[in-house]
Amino acid sequence: MSSPTFRLYNTLTHDTEPVEPIEEEHLRFYSCGPTVYTYAHIGNFRSFLTADLIRRTAEALGWTVTNVSNITDVGHLTQDDLVDPGGEDKMQQALEREGERFANIYDLARHYTDAFLEDWRALNLREPEVQPRATEHVTDQLEAVIELVEKDHAYTTDQGVYFRVESAEDYGHLSGNTEAQQLQATERDTVEDPDKRDPRDFALWKHDPDHLMHWHSPWGWGYPGWHIECSVMGMRYLGDRFDLHTGGEDLIFPHHECEIAQNQSLAGHRVVNTWVHTRFLQVEGEKMSKSAGNFYTVRDLINPDSSRDSDHVPAPIRQRGGVDPLALRYTLMQGQYRKPFNFTLDTLRTAARHVRRYREAAERVDEALEADVDGPDPLGPELGDIYERTLAAMCDDLNTPAATAAALEGVTAIENMDSLSGAAAHSARFWLDQTNALLGIVEPEHDREAAAPDADDHVLPADHFDASVDELLEERETARAEGEYARADAIRDTLEALGIEVMDRPDGTEWRRKNEL
Image (cartoon, rainbow, N blue to C red; front, side, top):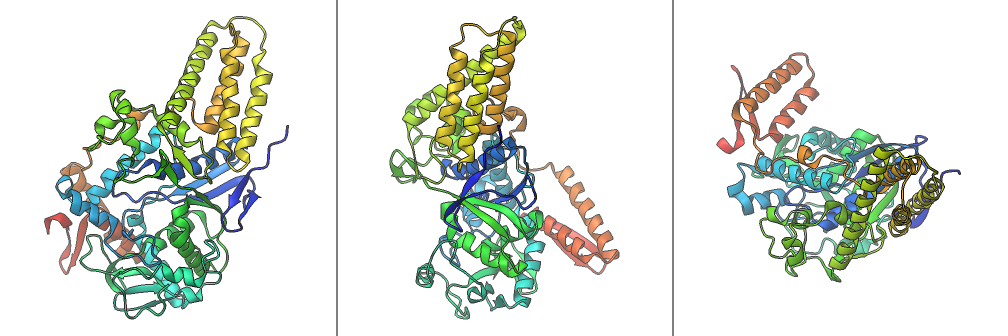
């Protein structure tokens, strides 16, 4: 049987289209990752799960996949629904709230990055090929901003560098927002720059020498805008033409609209072919919010004892010590990604029962493999047909409700067997492995205990840290002596990201930790 055609809904064209990789059978895509100022909630992970399922479906078709998923650890401001957001940087605000827990803002970023990766693995999400951090690519961002200024797509003021929206063709096409609607996203009370030429223009670089994370630029000390980060990291690792870009529907405007404007202004052509967005998640029929008491992080549900504030977690979950992470993954898959999904305890309980059935079926199959009893294999053809229907559902715009329903028929087929011959057990194990590779709901693919970082161990030993800094400084001096100034600047940016201030003096280079200032 020939492979089904993989189709996804493209927000840009408002149509469900075949996924046709630019490079034959090699899917290259970018996924917007988290801003690491707190623990990620289940709505965030519903979007990350969409990207994971795209990867798994493509790999099931025999394709190679290159996925880049970023870590935003600077520049994401609190009023992020505005074209040019204002307010505090979310990272800086978090440090003000939790200052006693962390030595500096870089320490906070590392802690929440580690926590995010732990939750990622717990939910059986596959690792992206590249997971870049914004603070590691400031030089790249500065180069992009300089290029946009040189191409007259951006201009400078005393307060920052702004992208000139008027210069971008089709701005608003992704979201469908008219110019009037775009202007509405600028009308809130924010600190306004009187030298901005158009209210819709958004910051590429912000002047702020007092910001806790800042870098030197041709326009003085400051930090990058949020939108430029993803444009730069996407094209850095995927080139100036790639297949897909994913994210939550809240990112369509302004973040992804601004990203498209930057990309096309830098490349001179369309960069991303397909934009895939995951719809919002509700909890028990209401918008998820802390004030409503229904705001759940992943760790709230899978390990409430580790949560600093687990009183809002439903009592049955607290009493059981948390839910199976695969049950949480299964629950989030019960709604197709581009339809609103209502997360309920009933759905979670049902998912937990289904995951238990998979686990029990796998245990029975493995026992039969050890026994290896002679006999016929009535399961092979039936399970093969079930897998084909499961894959066809996933290729149909990630129809996860249909896919999980089809796959559950395979569990029932195994359960209905009075006994399993060795041949039947081999077919069943092959089907379980195939289904797990496609859906990720049968068995964990990560050794969580081995992979999970210690949440409290987020500072390198001083002697190890100092030696690493000295090695980087030596490498920087070598680069400068050889005239490789771009590499020297990149090393300095890395040190800045580690919370190190580098001081070049006539008699040599010195360094110190920023929290020692």
